Length: 614
Image 1 (cartoon, rainbow, N blue to C red):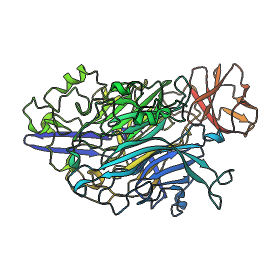
Image 2 (cartoon, one colour; image 1 turned 180 degrees about the horizontal axis):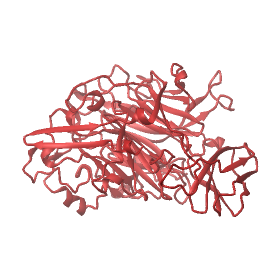
Image 3 (tube, rainbow, N blue to C red; image 1 turned 30 degrees about the vertical axis):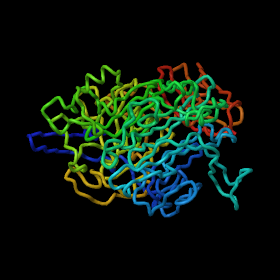
């Protein structure tokens, strides 16, 4: 198994003025995983999320649909159409453009997030969506000028077929739009970002969950948006930012001033880091949480060594895609700095003319100097941070630019050997990468040294739009959705600048780890042999109403620690025992699916059991 980790080797050979790129990549997907197609014929899938109802929720960007399939689907079900739970009509009403439009917004229907209490509180079956809803202008048909769109985030209510109040007739599972969280956000045909995630724990003085949203720089300074102003460094605006919003209105009354931030004031947390800088609006909190982002299409929470961190992946320019740890009131550099900033690979101060600009603006300073002076937060990891001499010129063949185009992101903490505490980064050019984090979660292992053996690719000839990971630690399963078409390098081209069809376009692929995962291991495995599998505990009854009993084997080192967690891994109850048999009171838990995690006296996780609370 260890040999499969030595798979990611990128070599650069620079002989000015010719640049030769040699890439030796061995895709380990089929070696490690069974790959099954579980759904097909999706229209530009953008988001896939594993919901607390054990369903996979998918948004279709250009179809403006939300569809749903069971996570238990197999290859046998691939021809069964997914269940449509929401569709917004195109061309009239809210969406004022249709498929005949000669310029489409990037995304369309974009991110989706499900409230953590979806299955435990019938009144909070809330699903949040972001989508581009209005085209304002597209001068010259959009061929030589920026197209201006508007974007919104809405809160929806989901009804199971049998729920009282279900508006569908005949009754069927239905998602309905309840209210607008925030509207009139900027939109574009490029760099909308559009991902949503919800905090894993409650936050702020009101102890509510918060909604986080990535919104890009609208492609400002690039291609047909080259005349568009870049506002990523302006904390009064919502372009090039990560936004923080309420998951439910806080009841704040209007100040009476005419401003979007006042219109949506009850959805903007009162403990957000910024007030508007203009005096007339200075009483208004802004939705901005962090700034200086280019096109962050990935965002996810991860719990590394007991600390929750918000991670994000972001498109670079002609190199330097980023993985970031997101902090409030923090500057991530764009468009002043690309990537780490320590390499000064973009600047007009050197002899290389091709690297003089970022976002169509002259870089007449050293990136490192600017980053230091402006307290820029540097990435945890940057891909292909090319030297100044290797940066391609504007107007060059974009298919040859050395970027991976990171399209989404998730945190893996399951039991695939060696994978715990890793980030999965999907790519529109190279499939998907696994980046192993250090124990504290504050660096990618291969970013802190010359060692790159633990940063390797999967699905290397696919154009992957998003990934969803099974919340059950021992399943070894995740799902990916494939973009329907595309015109970037990698799967649809390559560094030679060619073009080829998107592989498995519009499909959901299920990847299942081939080797049985060893969840309960002997407590003192030796280096001379593999761990011995043991069934160390039993729990009963299951389903449970009030008290769940644990029966452990005598060889377990004491004291034992049992944690009751929800399917997101949040610890809800704990119990400690110096005996093999003990009980945990779960009577106060709401009905739903939970996990019991058992740790031995060495603080080693030895077994996880799933149970149902009635």
